[in-house]
Amino acid sequence: MKIAIVGANSPVATELCLLLQAKQREVIPVVRNVFGTAFLNQFSLKCRVADANNEEEIKKAISDVDAVVIAAYKWPEMAMSPKETWCINRKIVENIVKNAPQNAVVIYLSTIKIFSKKLDPSIQKIGFRPQYGKEKKQLEKIVETKCKKRKQKCFALRLGHVYGNNQKTTKRVLELVAGKSKISLAVPEGRISNIVHTVTVAEAILKCINPQVKPGKYTVVNQPQ
Image (cartoon, rainbow, N blue to C red; front, side, top):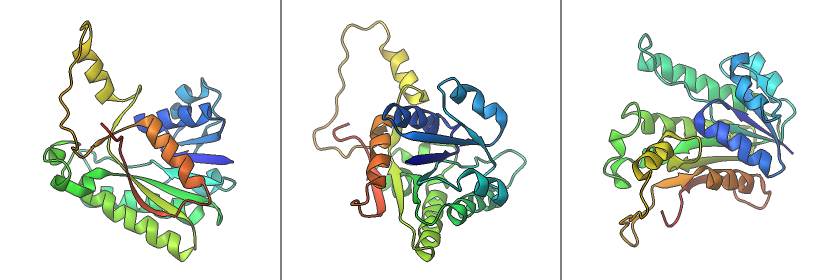
């Protein structure tokens, strides 16, 4: 089974490529340019170069896969307006769904930030911009609608704050605890979890590929934290 991960250069997606490969899956990282292949090639991953914003390129890159993980996301740049960024992100998901094989499973990596302060009072302070969660929710809907028209199985995985060997959050924690012989963490019993490890995300992706698992939206967090 071939699993394409579009946007494989992001810290989360890169780690997912390695974890899924370790589980003996055929992983195809799809990156935007040849420079993005350098790190992944060291682990014998056969990268494909394609800009998801370009329909012809992405069609060629994912034409033979059994599952597509959409990790691609365009972050805003100084010279770009929010509308321009939104149009790019919309085109990315539309191009991927439209050109994925008819029988391929589509998995969209979303975020628990769509729940806003209902889940985590500090959630609006996390990330590059407050509207990130709102935009992700809209993109979820586009993926769902497009897949429904094509009668295609799709999932939206709403990820918690991601931890893993390749994540900045993990590196900050390791710096804080470096040299300490004892670490105490006060986590109130029963508190809703708002974090997830990349190992858990990889397991969730494999569950989505299982024909018996019902498509839909799933919150993916570690329980307990």
